[in-house]
Length: 167
Image (spheres, rainbow, N blue to C red):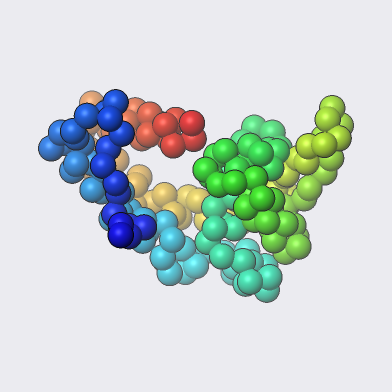
């Protein structure tokens, strides 16, 4: 039986991965602890951490927050589900926990009452912005150490990766 950590064979339309593809994909598990580890809690502003801990919220709940911060407008629960690649019920549960903690608000969409719009509570915006900047410092330092042409390619690659992940 295959464990959750072991990927299955590539889809047939992709063929066998190249050595470069294997090396790149091999980096993903190395990055995961940085995004989900104790470092996240240590970098989080105290007020945000307290609000999350008071409701027993997990890093999965926290993954919603940068999506709301990066969005130009409130997101639907379905939009959050798509961005995080989780089911609609899971996204709804995550948003519900954040709403109970007072970090996000849920309002009916005026154009479609069946949809719920999710927004970051404004008092948490500067806390989340500072948290995102602190979380991004290692990446910014890495980029700063690259020549300009490599930096542009690296950033272009990251953008392409995000587009693929977000579907």
